[in-house]
Image (cartoon, rainbow, N blue to C red):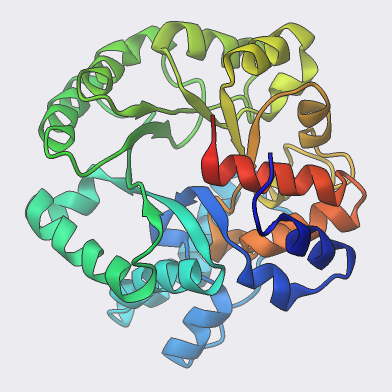
Length: 316
């Protein structure tokens, strides 16, 4: 798979040309919007030096504690939440995201009094920064939350037609996958793309179980599928995409390095993957940097990375 930008993208990687990489269309399909702007952008807007993240976090809780202390509380105290939100769309413009799937929570909707006010706010930012992008807002639910209450919200919010995918995030292993069936049945009813965070801290068998139980179309992370030839074959045969976030995996301790990242094994076994930021404000690695870091580490060739770029844009 290639497009009219493929040659330029491949050459940009080989020449380590960051300006050219920024100018070429890409996607970001795993992006938690409240933490989706660049740290330096936010620092400039608020005239405040936010500290860089550590090289490694002590798991998800360590990441959250750092984020709260280093960034979130300052933004709340200085009424800067909307500036932080705007930065996510400013980054979509800067990185020429032609396909963009930011993730929201039901509390984000409630803050605006419902879907109409919520959609009006975000659509204005999209029109300002990336009006030509394929915009696919995702609605995410916490894995530890009350599924019955989530089902009621899902019915209400998916009926609006605004959201294009569902996710369950915030940690693996809180409940059996079967507990989430009613939630994913609502997504199925409204023809919503079904995604879930699974197989980052969990196993390849968890990836398979989530797919079979919930009928997932895509998996957020899913990197531990690389430990199982049978699960990789399932993903390849069904063309189930893994939306991978390399820097996030490394900084949380789920991958050792870019050179050893499981994305190499996944690609070599025909598993469709995309490359994404996860939480740019925390992990401090934009989409263009993710591609360049994997190339410079020798993880994947420029040609393989371009195929991933195209898959993220055009899919199956």
